[in-house]
Image 1 (cartoon, rainbow, N blue to C red):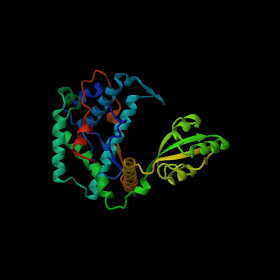
Image 2 (cartoon, one colour; image 1 turned 30 degrees about the vertical axis):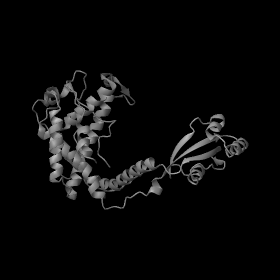
Image 3 (cartoon, one colour; image 1 turned 60 degrees about the vertical axis):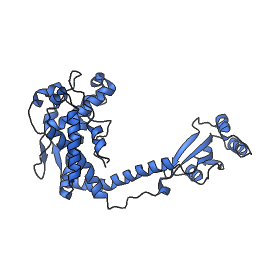
Image 4 (cartoon, rainbow, N blue to C red; image 1 turned 90 degrees about the vertical axis):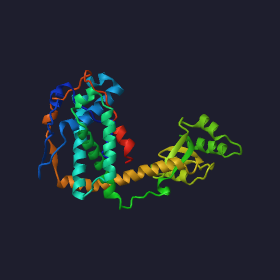
Length: 322
């Protein structure tokens, strides 16, 4: 499981917090039911705030701050919640890493330094003032983010998570979709004639304009999938009935290598996440930690905020291939 920022979420703060950002190293309090846990400082947290605030405004313009969501919420409230969740998860992942003895190597620490220097050098004076950060703050956040990803790999590396090509296999088919069995039999007869143009028959008779399908083994078990995977390239299936609809299937590619490898990687990541989640869920249950919400209560966004940085995660990806 990546703590990765689920790009499509996160963001926060603005003018209302500017007074707190000028040299103040206030910490976001964390309270554990077991022990006191030191949290990220406000400037460190503002790195994520600024990144996501600017990314969303760049995509949707400043009008996004007036968007209303269900439950009498606005967009900034939603994103504040996502930032808090992200920071909480990253802290918990680092606590787990500490418990399991997972640390960064000297090479990884050097890469963290390089990434931090590159990010800090990319900031404008307004960015630095908005976040109130130093290079050490950036280095801390890159180190924490890297460790939160590394702990996943370290705790699952000895597990048998391999995905076979057969399990991940993807094929490509063309189909003709019909709603009448007699018509389906008639079209099949035409499709299997010597020199028949399957594509032309699909355009003429099919009730579904989407002729081509890419199918992964196990994605939709049933008669259609069974029939499709039984075909070799250029073979045509008998009429297949599934849920009251009739299909004639022609195999275009009985092994899409690129799609299979891509799906294999996706299935591996899914299996890895599921395996790690079992460890992580147990750890969180045994080590309940909560953030105080006090610091976030007056968070506001403004189009007047003078910050433009968006590349914290892009620079991370440049140095670390998680």
